[in-house]
Image (cartoon, rainbow, N blue to C red; front, side):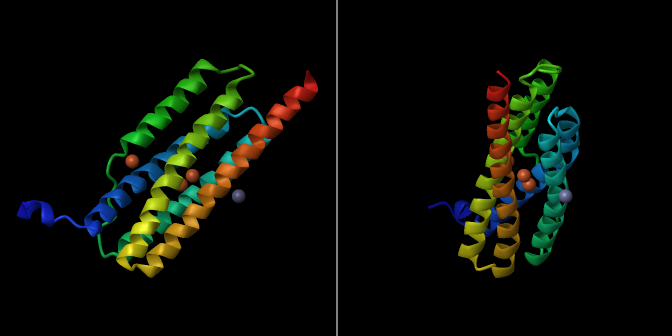
Length: 168
Ligand code: ZN
Ligand code: FE
Ligand code: FE
Ligand code: FE
């Protein structure tokens, strides 16, 4: 067994992943206003605006987590969120002014929520494993917001489908 390999621990993995989601949340603070502006339906725009407020709070929660583990709050490029926000930009550009725009925005937003749910679920499990009780609480608060956001988006998508069916 290589000595080098043994030096990396779950603590290191936790810190690296924390930097990844910190980058992602900060990128979303910049991206969500563009999605809100592009949204055609009021309920979708309001949901995105509301989640923007939550996202700003999530950045603050992550900064508390960095403090609790006594590490500098640093962001590390998250290639996943870069890709997902690029896809969202494509939808905004390619479907601008079309009836399908909101459906595209909804699907892009849900892809982001699912990524975040995955990351926070993992981080919370690792924090439990490491025994960081306060950190677990902070991560769980954000995880619940991400799950609620995802549920709200599903409801809006379903309501849209119903509206369209009625209009037909
Ligand atoms: Zn609000
Ligand atoms: Fe978030
Ligand atoms: Fe990432
Ligand atoms: Fe989110």
